[in-house]
Length: 341
Image (cartoon, rainbow, N blue to C red; front, side, top):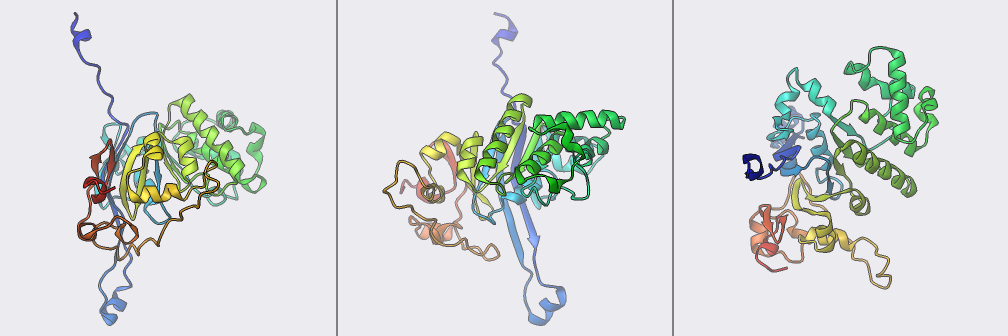
C-alpha cells in the first residue's frame, strides 16, 4: 500500500471559527450625572462568550428573542465591531487582527453582509447600477464603466432581476426586490462567507420564500457559507444545517437542524418550538413563551433563564451553566446535565 493511500483523509478545518466572542457596551450616564447622583458605570454585555464553527458551504442559523445579541454577533463577524474579548478565525487567519491591517481590505472582499431592512440599507439617491457597482469600484475589481455595467447586469440576473433595472432608484422597487438588490450588492465581490442579519423579516411571507430560495440556489451554485440570523423558526428550518439558540448574549444550545427540531434539549428551545402553530395539532392549545426577557443591564444570577424555567432549582439560581456536549448536542443547562429533563 502506498503512503498516500495509508494516510487518513485530512478533515477540513471550519471556514469560520468564533471562540469566546464577547462585546460589552458602556451605556453609563454622562460623567457629571454619575458624580452628582452617585451612580456607578453601567455595562451592557450584549454578547458574552459565544463560540461556534461554520463549515465551508454550510449554514449556521442563530435564533432567539429580540435583544439576545444576534445582530451584535453579526457585526462582530464582519468587523463592524471590535470584540471586547475572544476572537474570530476565518480560513485559518485571525480576522480581527487582519481587519486592522492592509490585508483587511482583501479579507472584506471575502466576507459580506446582508442587512435586515431593505428600505434603510440602500441609498435612495443612487440608481441600482451605482448601488450594486459600488463594491466593484471600492475593491478595484473592474477597470471601466462598460465592464462594470456588464457585471452589474449579471449580478441582477443572478437574483432574478433584469439588467434593465439598473437605471432605476430603490423607491421604484418592492421590499422583496430591494432585498434582491442587497443580495446582488453583497455578491459583487464574489465572497465566500455571507452574514445575513434577518434578511427576510421585513418582507411578506410569500416574498420571504422567494428570497430564501434565491439564497439557497446561490449557495449551491457558488459554495457560499452563511451565518443566518432570524427569530423565525420556520425560516431557520428551511435554510439551516446547524442551529444555535441564543438567550441574553449567550448560546444555550447548538445542534444539527433535524436534531434540534425533533428533540430539543434546553427548556428555552422547547419553549420556542412549543409556541409554533402546527398543522397536525389543530386541537391542541399553543404554549406561549412564558415570562419576559430579564433586563440585560441587570441579568439574574446563575442561569439567565432561571426566572422563566419550570425546571430551575437552587443550583440554577446560583451557578451559571457552561455549554457542554450532552446527548449529542451542545447545551448549557444544569437540568439536562443532571438528567432532570
